[in-house]
Length: 483
Image (tube, rainbow, N blue to C red; front, side):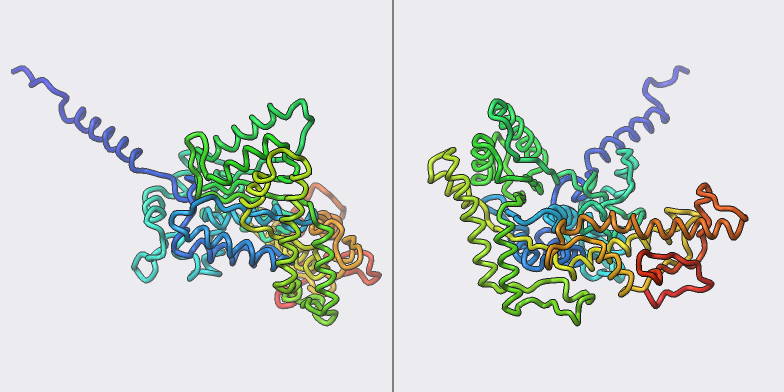
């Protein structure tokens, strides 16, 4: 008997499997942040995460942190904003301006969330990670974030995209140091977990290249905003933008749209060094009036790292920065004075970043040193070379390291930029010498090739008796409570 014509069971199964596969592709979406959208923006979770992230990582900038976080939270929680949020941050180099927008991106795109954060701030971040609590799904997550996180896990996305997941975002900024160690829940930002975070440069260029550079800048910005309407877009040295580029940017900031792209949910961060001398003068005046929290008695206390500036002085400084930018642009006569006013008026917040005092630098150095401790004791990073424990005397070691950083009067000349190099010079050297001594005691000779000589050992870091260097010494027991 002839077999009925048709696909048969195997063919039907193949067709069904193929249909299911394509249906899954249609349904599957990358989670918030990875797809360029804000995570849990309307429920207050992103705002709370932002405040906690800035407070925990950005030292010596309480005024700017409060101003910026308040504006960002209002913007995130506005259902239909009429324009993008535009923030102008001014201050000397090395004080945390660039680190601020990195922390901002990590917070709004959910890349500040990992296992350590969930343990420390579980009640705050549970909604952002769509975790179940007491057997029931939390209600604090935006519907879109719920759907995308449920349909597409982080691990499956990175396996599919074949993305390198090495995490080092905690050390990108000059104030960095508190690095989240590698785990299956790590987010990489800057990187694949926040593709909507972009930095462009508005610096001036030779006149003959003005047209080409302006067109290139416009295309780069618009193409990015078309792909990611909820962008965190940074323009560095914005005050030095040429006339054509500035005119283009003004139109984008005023309207929140251009060339078939609408991006009213976006956050623009305009960064500049201009005005830092007046910012410093303001801090000097406030300190002289006794409005600073810093005293000699609390030199190494964490609470003293944030200078207190009065609301009146803050407002005065903000107005100065606004007037400074307006005067500079008006002198260049790129456009009618009315358009110059519109350009400056499109900026929602002018935020001063103050010079870093010694107490702020102490906290920055502490953050870098604590990150070094975490790295050196992490078995997943170092294998059998990982230290059993790595402790230090906080007061003496921090004072020694901070004294290696150059200050002019009350303020660090290069802000927090010197902290990583200072640790390399003194902490890394101390560990290297300790490893050589340990190698010699075990094998009878010193060898730089044996990098695991300190593995499994308790190591204590302290200031040498002569006070000219740090010494790392192997101890027979841990000094955990004394770090």
